[in-house]
Length: 218
Image (cartoon, rainbow, N blue to C red):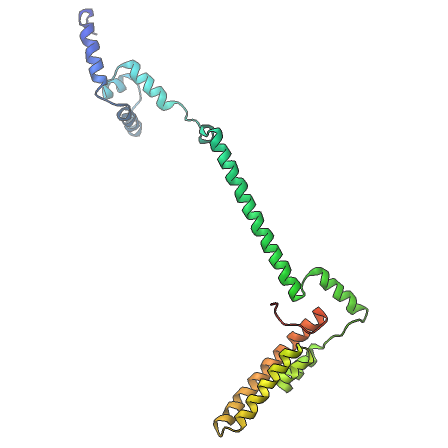
C-alpha cells in the first residue's frame, strides 16, 4: 500500500512506467505469457508490464475483442469493384465457350459429323437416294492401283494429280539403272499400302457428305 502523502509521487511513477511500454510490446508480452501457460491475471500482468491497472484492462479487452470479418470491412465501392470483376470473368468465360462451340460446330459440319446433316444423310440413304462407295472396294482399288485407285472416291483433282505424279515418278525411275529399280522395289509397296488406307477414308467421306470431298476441312 502507498501512503496518502505519497499518492502524487505514485501517480508520477505510474505514468512514467506507462511510457516505458508500447501497445505492441504489451501484446507481445501477452502472447508470450499465453505461450508459457501463465495465467493472465491482473497481478501477473502488472508485474510483467509495470503498467497501471486501467491501461492493462483496456488493452487486454482490445486484444480479446473479436475482429470484424474482412467482408464487413469492405466499403460499398470495394464491393462494387468485386461485383464488376465477377461479371467480367463470367462474361469472358461465356464468350470463350460460345467461340469454342461455334468453332466445334463448323468443324463438325465440314467433316460431316453434325447431327442434323447426319440424320438427313441417313434418311436419304435409307430411301436409296444418292451414290455410295464401298469401303472394301476402295481399299482394294488403292492396294492394286495405288493413287489411280483413289479415282473411285477421292476428289477428281486430288486423285488425278496424285496419279500423274505417281506415273511420272515410276517412269522416271525405270530409266535409272540399279538405283531406280531398288527405289521402285521399296517405293511402290509403300505407296500402294498408303492408298489402301486412304481409299476407304475417302469412301467414308463420300458416303457421309454424298459427294467427293476432302478428308479434312479447309
